[in-house]
Image 1 (cartoon, rainbow, N blue to C red):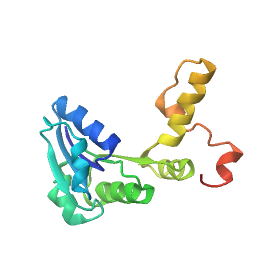
Image 2 (image 1 turned 90 degrees about the vertical axis):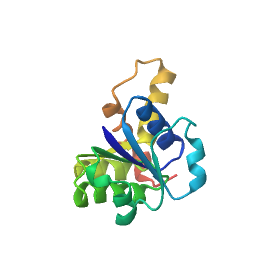
Image 3 (image 1 turned 45 degrees about the vertical axis):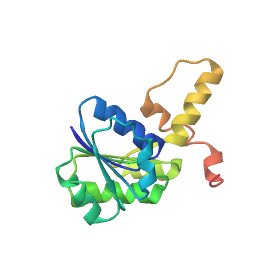
Length: 156
């Protein structure tokens, strides 16, 4: 599988390293060249310095031939805009955006964009761990807390 990853932070580097070891063709994009230090020395994927919202950068990453595009930068807007660009402009069949804001994540998911809200997933796992409950499926955690009034109060 050919996968393009936007964001070489801890999550992006972990996904890239793991999938590369599994034999997938990985290209990772980040604006900061120092971010690539998170990758293992034996990482054999392609590293691109650039802006993931730039068509030129995405073309350099050969995104039009990718099977999947993952956006895991620290910015919700950047992640959602880049996956939309990959999906609509470059016709990438599978796109996933990490979104911190549960309300945004739910809204984009309702529009057909695969999102993972690490805020909801983390809160759900911690909740179940504290209560000694068995872990649920990720899909269930992605909705964790969305009915709570806490989310209506604003960001934190």
